[in-house]
Amino acid sequence: EKRDSSGWTALLYADYCKQRDCVVAMLQPDDPDVCAEQLRLLAELLQSPVRTTRERATQVLEYVATVPEFFGAINSYVAANPLMLDTTLSFLLKNRCLLSFENKHAYFRRRIADSSDMETSNGSWASSQSRILVDRARLVPTACASLLNMSGDEVRNSNFAVAWEGEQGVGTGPVREFFGQVSAALLSEEEGLFFKAGDGSVLHPKGGRQSVRKREKMQALGRLVGLAMRQQVYVNVRFSRAMVKLILGQRLGFEDLEEVWGDLYSNLKWMLDEPDSTSIYETTFSVVEEDDAEAHGEAAGVKTREVDLIPGGRGVDVTEESKGKYVEAYAKYKLGESTRPLFDAFLMGLSFVVDRSIVQIYSEEEFELALCGLQEINVDEWQRSTVYQGWTDEGPLTKDSSLAAWFWTYVRSLSRESKALLLKFCTGSSSVPPDGFDHLFGLYGEQRFTLVGLGLGQDDRLPSASTCFNMLKVPQYPDASTLEEKF
Image (cartoon, rainbow, N blue to C red):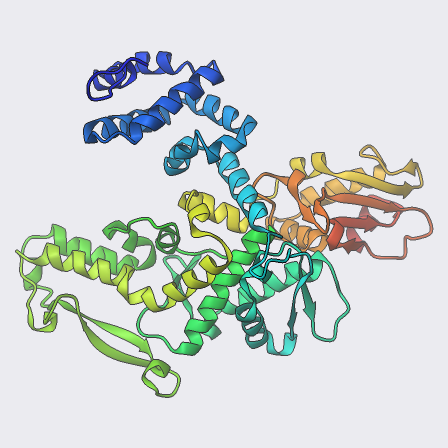
């Protein structure tokens, strides 16, 4: 713990001298307690008033994050002592590369739980159910109205329910269907909030000025996404990397254009790299933007306008000397100001439901995993995690029963898409929680998948499910081929 006049410890000097073996040895990753104490000292150094000390401490952290032994040791320690992220180890939340996804997600869930069912704004405790009513015939307008009318106390209530107009369903099934149906509707081309970017697999907000109606729908989508994360319902929402980075408060750069506007990125890169390119592309410091015509008080459609990238840009020619500035300004506009009307509405909705600071602990890939769940279904894990109940012609249903063996053989024979549909039939969601099948969420919290045998005399019935309990009920069929036919 000895330090010099600038506050440097031996650990910082070892890193400064590029003695990386010494750095690892001092951190003692095999001893979690010593490792945690060294982290505590680094946390202090990160708060040093001396800039060079802060910078060196940051470099040490960036290096040790690449050392598997250290990464494993500190994350094991955090997993065993999660509340230390609120105190001594809180600086790890600002150095996201040091925390595993499992620890980040556990922290996120704990913070959500801490803010749920808390004392409400009027001094009472939130214990009643937050319930919204949706009409299938008017899905988008009724869903958006319900979402935007929810109070802060209601969105924090963990006792969340959905009722479909004229239907009797209750529990997690209608809730999961609500998130799936409404998210798909708001992301569709008909609503005009997003366009398919790159190879068509991701969505990016449309640019230009947007009508109040569309901004309200985008705000409702933000609330929907926030509620899905709060309620541990996974939705198939594939945003562009650029949009996710904006959600996480990260800086965007020229390279972020490539996924969203591949042709534009290639053309601008060619302009940068090719000598005398401006003699071929005669242009000014301006772009043509497509607005939602309703934002101008006109009928639905598109209205174009010229936008200056710099003051008076439409009158300023792009030259060889200024093309770098032009490309930078163009990229900044397309990734920022152009999509700001819809993105800001989305962010307003998301932040109303979930504290943005706890969302920002994730990387771009981790955010998608937390929102969408695992898309790849591991049948071995699914089978290992399953609980067995009920009866077969052999007696109680167990993992070794013929009916169970036939079922898992059938599941393994399915395509990826069909496995997802089967999982949705059983649980109401086609995605797996980020931490696996053991953490499937049901009516009463975590509920593992349950396979139930209905016994003899039921072979004329089809399989049925109780999505609230992640339960699949299978009659006793005479053989494997009959089981496959019934599914």
